[in-house]
Length: 105
Image (cartoon, rainbow, N blue to C red; front, side, top):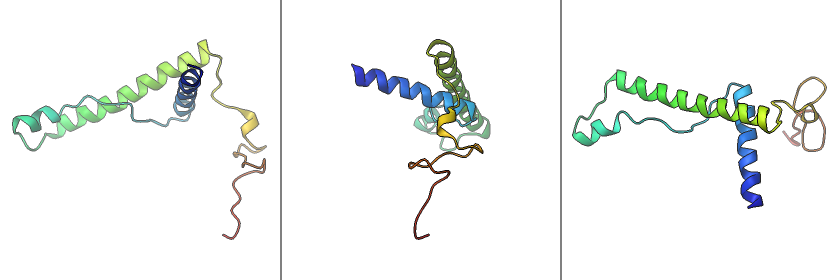
């Protein structure tokens, strides 16, 4: 039960970060073209393809917006954590240094 709860909170926290940084994740879509292919119409029209794409973006936005609201208003999450950033806004590496350091490159 505890692992399920932590997993759910992490999922919401990631959606909050994605929403704040305008990064859309795949959350599903309304499949307008699949029924046409099953009926025997091999090539869907551009309008049907655009409807499917718009549904993909809309569903992603709705999921992220609702997670943002739940995370920030109900759970007290923040969209930015200063302790994970350097002094100039760059992310810190695992050892606390600014940026990622790769030896031998």
